[in-house]
Length: 122
Image (cartoon, rainbow, N blue to C red; front, side, top):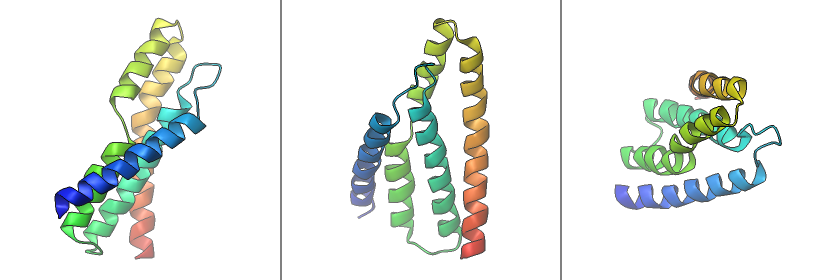
C-alpha cells in the first residue's frame, strides 16, 4: 500500500510542479522564481507533514507517501543547482549568490514556520 501512495502522491507532486513552473516563469532579470517558489512551498508542506506525523495524525504509509511522493515529486535540487550556475555563467553573480544563499535559508525557515503553525493548530 505504501508504494501505491508514493506513486499516487508522486504524480500529484510532479503535476503540481509542472503547473507552478509554467505559471511562474523566470523573470526577465533571469531570477528562477518558479523553482524558488516551488522549493519554498515544498519545504512548508514538508513541515506540515512532519508535524502531522509527529502528532500521529496519519499512518506511516500516508506520511511516507506524502513526504517522498508529493514533496519529492514537487521540489527539486537539480534545477536549483543548474539555475544557480546558469546565472553565474551569464554574469549575474549577485543573483546567483542570492539564490544560492536565500533558497536553503528561506527553505529551512519555511519548514520551521510550518512545523510551529501545525503544532499550534493540532
